[in-house]
Image (cartoon, rainbow, N blue to C red; front, side):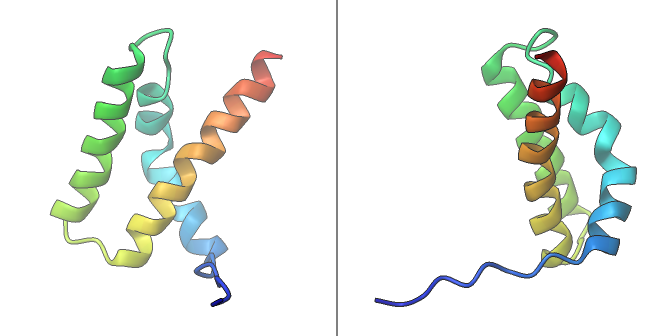
Amino acid sequence: KREFVPQALDQALYDQISKEVRAELTDSLNTEKHDKAESHTLVAALKKRAVDEALPKAIRVHVTRLSPDLFRLAVNESL
């Protein structure tokens, strides 16, 4: 069995991406404003835009990782 080694997170890059897309991503994840399917569509469109703007793969990985982090934060704040 092969050991899974997750890709290393570049915290500085993650913070930069967070600053650039956080507001739009947070809005996209708001299921009170958008239904679940629309929310997934908006997040997918944000990821696609990152690809279309020729962002390096490392940046796309960080945007992908930011989504669940913001979702967990929103859930924790609502408790």
